[in-house]
Image (cartoon, rainbow, N blue to C red; front, top):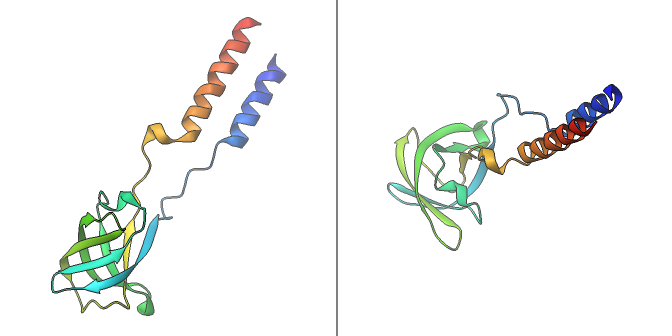
Length: 131
């Protein structure tokens, strides 16, 4: 019985993904397609999470990602084109720059590890209860 429990714990530990370190950001880069006086347009494709992203910025990749401006995403069209308003600017924005947006973490109920752990816990509890 102890061997079975040890094997179940070892298997569960091996299958659970490691959590990401705090220093590893989930930043995604987007190509700027057009620049207006106070707006920036960029392609996001099918990434619908861009609208609810709390922070976005324009960086210059040729200058080691030096921050050029801060943005607030206003909308994403059905063609995958996003429009953002400039909220703070340190330099001139061009199409050579890229938009950098942090991808928000997934919701807890969409985590596969949670449901796998719950199922494994139920199976282990049921199996141990029958012994």
